[in-house]
Each structure stands twice: as structure tokens, then as C-alpha cells.
Length: 254
Image (cartoon, rainbow, N blue to C red):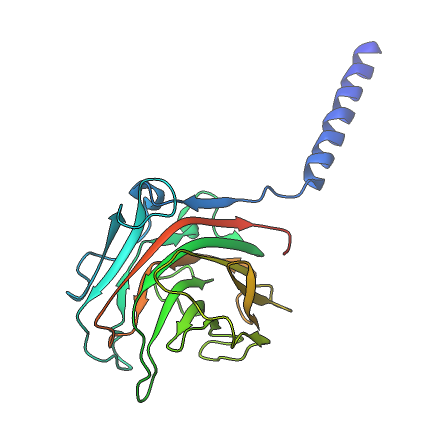
């Protein structure tokens, strides 16, 4: 009888422990890189050097926010204009591909903080004004990156969200027209992404001041891939971007 009572008690304790564990929230995951090691991006796609013979990127000690290295991307020469069949944008960055990790894609909301130092002249142009893209986020686990949200800099100096609320759209709930992005100095960018199917949105802060806010549709509550670094239109002929101290965290809210 005593043996059966002990066994029953053990089962009850195990059951209550399992219920308690199931009630605990999933541990939030974090990806960090200060670009001190290429191993941070092991197994992820990295844009080849001398992309289209006009774009390069590597570790650099020239301009650093912390540690020994930052990530540097630079342009030397224009590319032919893009067409509906070919994207000739300048590229120089490592990607982050959460779908290739043991934990799989990140679940939003996520909070992203990174530091940038940019020296690049952007000009108004017929057809499409020049721009620079600091960050690209997608829920797509394939190489197509069909649905994206970008954090861009306009030719006249304002950081803004792109492809909101739908792909190809530029409709924002708030957009600064007063706080310009200062070039040739370190700037902190923070991005909050809530990709839930109903009520999704994104916000961007520049040095802790809100500069852009928009609804986001059709992202399914997940962040699969991202990239930070050099991404600019083919008309750009020169310029440099440094990135440092990147943190991507799953969070419960703002």
C-alpha cells in the first residue's frame, strides 16, 4: 500500500510540474553581432565581394562604435539601371536567416537596435529619387524575399518605413519631416516589428526619437530573414556605410 501511495504521489508531482512548465511563456530568443567575427553569420548567405564590380563589404577597424571591428560596405561606380527583369541595386551585407537555425524563424513582436555611420550623397532623380536602405526584414523563408519591410533614408534626409502597409506602398501613420538623419556620425536606429495578421505595425526611432510609424499587413507574425549594411540604387556612384552593435530580440511588446 505504501509503495502504491509513493508511486501515486510521484505521478502527481510529475503531472503538476509538467502543467507548470507548459504554463510558462516560451523563452525569448536574441541574435546579436558586433561584427567581431564572421562566424556570427555562419551558414547564412553573404553577398559576394565585388558584387557587379561596384560594391564591396568586409570587417573594418576604420570607423567603429564598439569593440575592434564594424561592418563596412562601400560603392565605387554606378550599375546599369534596373528593369522589371533585373535588379541592379548595390549590395554588400551578410544576411541573417533564422529559418536555418535550430530554433527556426523568430516570432514577432521583435525589437531591433543597431548603430549606423553613413557617408553617401543622395540626389533627386527623374523617375525615382535616390535612397539608401539601412535594413530589410522579411517573413519569407525562400530566396525570393517576396514580402518585405524596409527602413530607408530618403534623398532629402528622412528615415522612413517602406513597403507599408502592403508591398510597394508608402502609407504611414506618422512620418517626421523635421528630424533629419545626420551623416558622418554614429546614429542609433531602433525598429519595433509586430507582424501579427490583425493589427500589425512597425515603428522606427532615430537616437530614441520616433521618426516613422506604419501599419504592416500580410507578414504572418514571423521574422524569417533580415539584412543590414549596403543596399542602394544602381545610380549611386560612391559612398560608405558602417554598421555595428546589432541586437534582434523577441519581446512581449514595446
